[in-house]
Image (cartoon, rainbow, N blue to C red; front, side, top):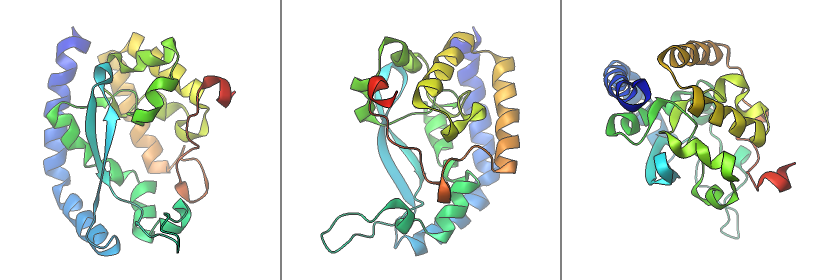
Amino acid sequence: MYKLFFKRVIDFSIATIVFIIASPVFLIIVLLLFVVNKGKPFFFQNRPGKGEQIFKVIKFKTMTDEKDSDGKLLPDFKRMTRVGRFVRKTSLDEIPQLLNVIKGDMSLIGPRPLLVNYLPLYNAMQKRRHEIRPGITGWAQVNGRNAISWEKKFELDVWYVDHCSFLLDMEIVGLTLLKVFKSEGVNAEENLPMRPFTGTNAAN
């Protein structure tokens, strides 16, 4: 009953309240990113949601669109602004996703929505991560985030699908707040994303 009904009610209620409370911070970040990103404070991208249905996720844009002489985007670390680095390190770039939660595309807690082009690469077990709405944070994020392998991350996602409960969600919320406060679990120098998923066999 929780997974089918109450989880959505709680998601909508909490996301609405938090977004209203965080609106001053939201506006400040929008203004700062508007300046450093030359008028582009937001990042939109198609992602697969529940049942692999595609939706458009919204996040704060932490990198510029600077290109080299050949018209290709510069490496991530060269496009990451000082403001963007701070926003990503503190996980403030996730705030706009509260709008996705309010709309019903996402949940507060669940497997993170990944790239659409990963869909053909999942095996049968990994596909099960799409049996529920994706989340802003999840079981994999509080158990290693970008520091663990893709296979382990998917394993944790599916474990969450099978064990989703109110108490587990409360535990994940608590652990997420703790990790954000400590700035733990972000892989990489300069807090850049982990390497792309290329399929289970290729990743082993």
